[in-house]
Structures are given as C-alpha cells and as structure tokens.
Image 1: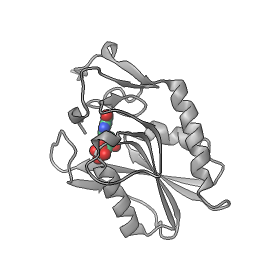
Image 2: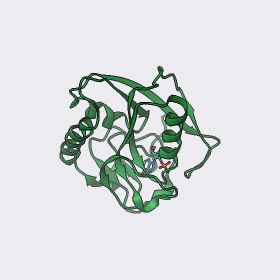
Image 3: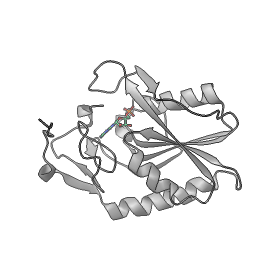
Image 4: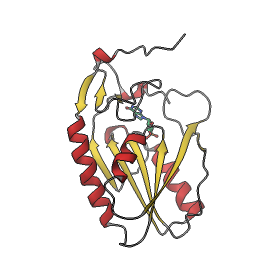
Length: 190
Ligand code: IMP
C-alpha cells in the first residue's frame, strides 16, 4: 500500500507564494552572476533532493556557460534532527580545481550541512571561487557560525515544505513554500 503523509495539505499555510519565489530567483541569479568573471563557465552544484526546483529555475536566468552537477548529502543512522555525522553520497564530480563553483541549497537551518559542504569543496577541490546560495535562511536555528553568500528569504523557526522541500518525502512538488502551523523546525526528517 502507498504511504500517505501524516500531515494533510489542507493544514498547510502559504509562507512564500509562487510569484514571490519566481521574482526572488531571478533577482538572485542576476546578483550571483555578477560575482563570476564574464566568459568563464560556472559549475553549478545542485544539492539533492531539496534544492532541485530552486536550482533548475535559477540556472534558467544565467547567461554564463554552465555545467550542472548533482550531489546528495546524508546523515549516518536514522536521525530526526540535524547531526554532525554528515557524508556525501553520489558524489561523482569532475575536477573542480581552479573552477568557478556555485553550491545551490534549499535551506540553511542549523548550518551543519552548509559547513560540511563548504569545507568539503574547499579542501577537496580548491576551486578558484566558491559561492554558496540558499533559497531560505533560518538564521534563528543556527548551530554553527556560517552564512551563505546569497540567500532568498530569511524565515522563522518553522518547518517548511514545497518547492523542493519535503516532509517525509512528500510535498516537494508544491510551487510555493508552505508550513504546518503547529510544526517547529526540530521536526525535520531527512
Ligand atoms: P542544516 O544542516 O540543519 O542546515 O539542514 C539542512 C537540510 O535540512 C536542508 O538541506 C533540508 O534538506 C533540511 N531542512 C532543514 N529545515 C527544513 C525544513 O524546514 N523543511 C524541510 N527540510 C528542512
């Protein structure tokens, strides 16, 4: 039998509309492009699965030549909260030494994933330039001292879904960002 989400879509409240996301993504793309040299390619790293919608919409606005790469990050064990025990899986990247690299994330919550990714790319690849963009930024939930170079929206300590973000694998397909009124960020399930 197919698993059903235990939170119903009728309970969802819209936090950021499709239209607002679309305007913000275009604006972010224009600003991000300015930091990369003209006539040089950008390697765009889409961090699956949550940033898939954001990443594909973002790159549509780029005029640079780009290469798209995809990685997944997972936690060891079955944690329901953020954990330090992160590992990169499905990490088959080309040699990014001396390349322009843009990491695209859906949300920075505790900051553990952003820290892990930034350190990984700096140490393993020593790119020419490493820029980190996240659509959402939950500054209030931060556990490590890290900020993205660019972000779209700062949000409160809410558990959000939609536009790539999921609850137990569901709701990634929603075109807007929504939240369940009774939920807190600590309900995060990866
Ligand atoms: P961090 O390591 O705590 O910053 O969390 C980063 C990852 O946790 C994100 O890439 C998301 O996959 C997931 N995450 C954090 N907050 C939320 C949320 O509110 N909804 C859905 N996923 C979230």
